Image 1 (tube, rainbow, N blue to C red):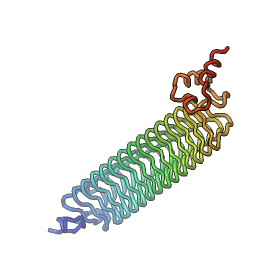
Image 2 (cartoon, helix red, strand yellow; image 1 turned 45 degrees about the horizontal axis):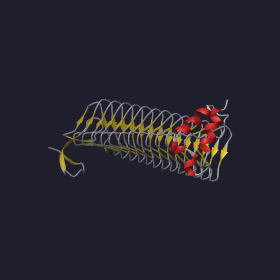
Image 3 (cartoon, helix red, strand yellow; image 1 turned 180 degrees about the vertical axis):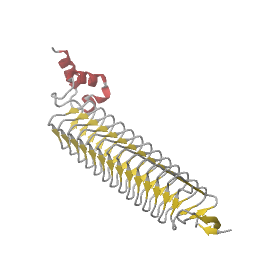
Image 4 (cartoon, helix red, strand yellow; image 1 turned 30 degrees about the vertical axis):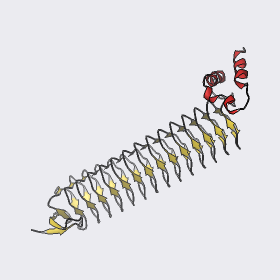
Length: 324
């Protein structure tokens, strides 16, 4: 009986060389005659390689992993756990696919990327460099995730979106369309970044906030709550947009500005310095200003009187609303 040491801590175990390629296969593993196992590749544990799959280079398929269809696993790749690589997917370089992860379609995982736990990379997506896709995250469509990026939770990155640098997308966040999240930016909770939007530098988008259109959020800016930044708007430096605020058009919000409550900043408005905005400041926007004012009156937590702007401002607004 022939034996081979797969260096998995079990010592020499019964094994044989696969007739299609000559690579070592443990007797406990299952490899179809149609599959190709390169002379330097190894399949062991209870792993399965079937159909027209190819394992070559110094790749290892181990434990209960499966590689099938027309999938290719090569380089110094390790596919382990109960992971599956199938369809026309490719895993190469020093990539790791493990846990219950799946890579399928024509997806590519390469260089030093990891796909783990219950994560899925599918369709035409690419995950590479040192990127990690973990937990229940999904990357699909033509999306690209690379650099030292982490995509986790049940986050989704799809269509033509790109997440790279040291960016993180987590929680139930979604990044899609042609959106880009990069540098040290973070998108998390239930936030969405989509369209042609960009979030970068150290910016954060979280809670239920959305950044979309051609909007850009950068610097140390924060967008949170149910706030939305859209169209060609920019939020940057140390600005914070939150609550139910909307920033749109070609507006710029910067400095240490706070935009919150029922604020609507739009058109070509620029808000900067240490400004605080919690009501509409441009009535050319596409909304009913009187309706917004009534909302303010009904929400005492957002009334300016609470922060001492004007002791009778709520009465002033009320009188304005009564006028024809």
